[in-house]
Image (cartoon, rainbow, N blue to C red; front, side):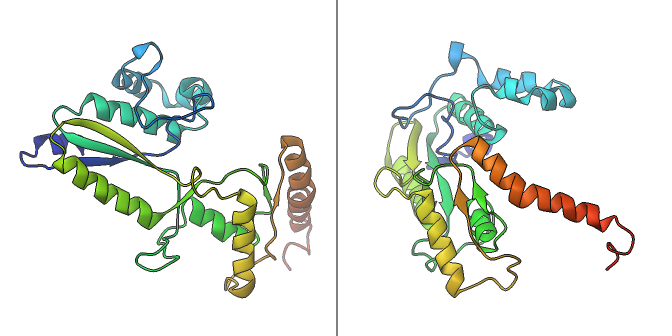
Length: 246
């Protein structure tokens, strides 16, 4: 897309959508609206080329080593994309919008509208159907959600302001809510469960309830006793002649 933008003679501006978690490999503190340099000023395209030249099985076996302090490949590749975008920018008047966890719309086209079950939508559905019972985090953890229409508005607005700005280059804008309107994950959970009590899903296999478990040990014990062990027993029973066929 950036290469296409560079070939457009009369393009006013170019906006790239990234993620607010692109710098989650950094230690705590303020994450500025800028693209941080890689350690040792490495070239992002060289890093990508090296990974692409590796054996797929080697990549799978050494994923954690390759991505370093990033928690997953999603944030890692988003980080490399931002740096490549900046490197190739040329004379473009560009912007990078970094949304946090996108959720249903606040106002437009109607409150609560969404067309995807990815990210926050998937969690809402899983909790509302009674599928997810334990979340490994503290209930006071800030769940930074941002309505989809606010993100869309920022993308459009940033395209306009970059178009009327005479200076080329990349401007970075975070699209998040935790600084001004923080939402604790316990409040998010309660909101979903309260909603489905009045408007239950047509297919709701279990009664919705969810607990936050702040420690890894508590999560494993609770999940094991109430989820894994019963599932294992059901699998064993299904193999017994006369039971599995009923």
